[in-house]
Image 1 (tube, rainbow, N blue to C red):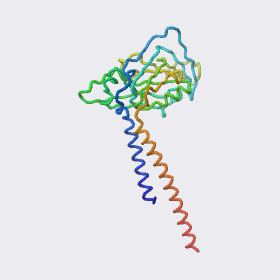
Image 2 (image 1 turned 180 degrees about the vertical axis):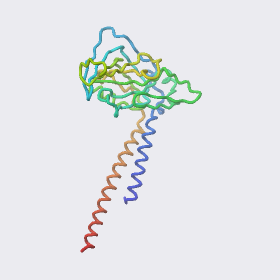
Image 3 (image 1 turned 30 degrees about the vertical axis):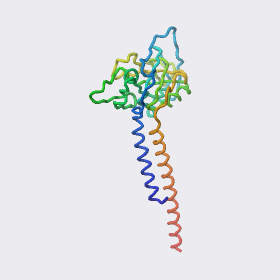
Image 4 (image 1 turned 60 degrees about the vertical axis):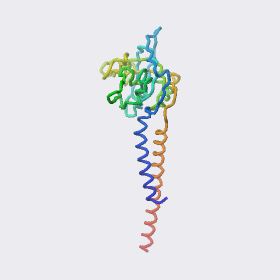
Length: 260
């Protein structure tokens, strides 16, 4: 393949990658016939006995957790924010946006558009869609357990997922056992599905990978095309660089020969 062909391949691969990235954000629209468990309401209950979660230090911060309720949620994932740019990313594995209940049973999620941002999610719909704002949510999922953390990271848009754990209020500081209130960040959990705005997200602590269950994997077409486009762009870029180096060597050799 000549240089012009490699350039076309690079441009095509880049277009494929960015186009697939965009379409993959809407993979939830391809989910038909969601599982019965995703059509139920989340289960929230007071603990029958005192519960404690071991504090942990990860990255620049130490975390302390105050368990409020046990929580069990199954739903269709409409988006995941992996917190790559967050200072709290060493314990906050992801924000997982999910729909459940009637929104899942009637497949309302296929008729709306979601946006998952760094710390919250948004939903837009046209007239005629009876989307229930009390049956979707953005959950901050925390874990100090490496296996559970990895399991949360593996969740993809369009997956049907069950999450189990504890709704917690979290305190975050640079030193373990910090008592100076001015140096403690607080991350409170919502405990109602009917609130909205700032503070309406659930903060869920999962203890083990068994608490993160992908009930059914979502469509992967656009995900595969995304990685195919990225691989094609990298491969064609490397080949273009090698071709440029060969041309540069030939030009230098011809220049040296002409000087003699």
